[in-house]
Amino acid sequence: MQVIDGFGGAITEATAFTFSQMPAAMRRQVMTALFDPVRGNGYTLCRTHMNSSDFGLGNYACADTPGDTSLSKFTLDREQKWILPFIKQATEVAGKPLDLLLSPWSPPAWMKTTGKMNLGGKLIAKYRRAWAHYYVRFIQEMEKEGCSIWGLTVQNEPEATQEWDSCIYTAEEERDFVRDHLGPALADARLKRVRLLIWDHNRDRLYQRAKVVYDDPKAAKYVWGAAFHWYMGDNFENVRYLHDVYPDKKLLFTEGCSAVSTPPWEVGETYARSIIADLNRWTSGWIDWNLILNETGGPNHVANYCTAPVNYDREFKKIHFRPHYYYIGHFSRFIKPGARRLIAVSTADDLETLAARNPDGSVAVVVMNRSQIPIIFRVTVEDKSVPFEIPRHSIATFVIPAGKRSK
Image (cartoon, rainbow, N blue to C red; front, top):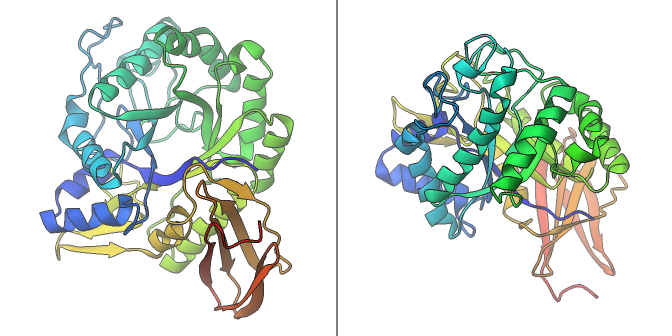
């Protein structure tokens, strides 16, 4: 089936700033836990924001001077404080550059109809060309810093007017911006290798929004695929429907988190259920939201707190690895970039499963039991079969090394 591009989380300003507050020994421990390919979760695919997001210390843009359409005052000064040092340390631990996905939450305030980065608003028509070149400039400047820009989304959550950084596009406006401005700007800058993704919002409207862009050949030629989140219901079948109708376009999960009040084990199961369901419906990768937050679920400049797999308690100077860190690890540690999904058929409704063949020929099979009782089952791959009892509310990963199968 599809190639798996990887797993990871978001390197927000909140994540990088919180990381910077840790003692040196804790920073090394956290980096190992997240990015080490042998001793940690081995994350390879991560997302970061272009300009500010809600998970940061405040609004900012890389070109804040009103009317600076030539971007003469463009700077990465804010990224240099925390985000870029974090990326560079993660690269060292991972042993290779991370694949980075860029997403804007808002253009600079002066480019918007409202004159504000927060509370929605739209991109002013006369600044569409300048905004398209802003993406190009951001990619180029990040690559000068040694970053590997894997992909780009047009806009984070383009149908949500949020209290924080946000910008609204209709499906037709997103289509036209890609076709007439962003796609050509990337092509002219020889950045076609950077994957361009549309939507970057919830599964509920994934099909309808993507259809508008994909049905326009002049826009669709620039688009690698569609990105999506999970905040408005499961709607897993919408992911499959989009693939079935447009099989040449890719799918990527780019954000999910839970309220800080959600029971921790429930968060872990929610994550694993989403990964299993999305990848079994042709999604090629899965990116968590903030990699690290403090004990409150922040910092966040509008108090929009949420969970993270790693929390740093500033008062007691302790690190807490939440259950969803381990649940994600059941996939990211054993299903490697370049793996191909295999059909994994469960004969019991209570057993959810995902399988993939890695580039080295090994096969990883993940099985989760969200029921209240233990379940006895067998893992069968070709002519090999292994019995196992999985406890209630638990997850297990089986790895069949290359050369151990009958084929």
